[in-house]
Length: 298
Image 1 (cartoon, rainbow, N blue to C red):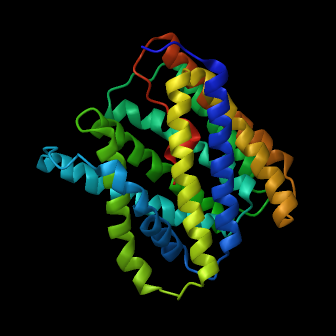
Image 2: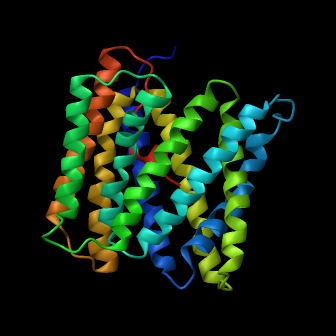
Image 3: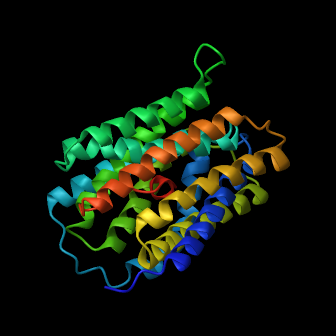
């Protein structure tokens, strides 16, 4: 096992956060002229170019019918998630999308009890309750209008969590590169008919922006892997909070979105709960289940 390098891990997680903030900004810049389903499809179609070196040499991997069912299920979950995410990005501020995306690791923690046989201790229950309070702080039902973008993100976090749990099962049985590659292939295939049904011819500028989305998303997942290799998740997890800060500043400076302090507070509560769950997993020396927010993204 390589020695822990916390400074290196924090650096790569900072880069990861910047990559995913760039993803949100580029999707926001693309606008809503192209339907969310088509935007999601083009992002994955253009991103297939990055799979060529990833899948080389994996042709001899033996897959069972169960593996194929899990790949299909994960592809369906992730396809629904990216459609909802693209839809939310055109409806609500970047900071709110970023803050609510932190919910996915919380749902993973809950789902791990039923899918992976994890124990739901009282401290984890308290952390989950705290995260749900953070959601209420962001949404403030009865005080502000809950928009369709908020509802989309609530469902998005659930389906991303289901996809992540499926990936955890697959990662124990097949090469990680195959898990990543099959996701992109199946998502592209599943999104294709829905994108064709609402097809709007994209401009070269829109295609360029969506290709950059694919580039930054791929880079973000790669640098996140480097961060995990350099330091424990208990070190790198809190750094993901800066992504909410950057998203808030970006929304205010680039898209004239008002800074909502309640979104920052609510997002901080959710991330604090996720960080606590991650820390407890490390203290108890259990197999890490709870992912960082970016791990359940595009």
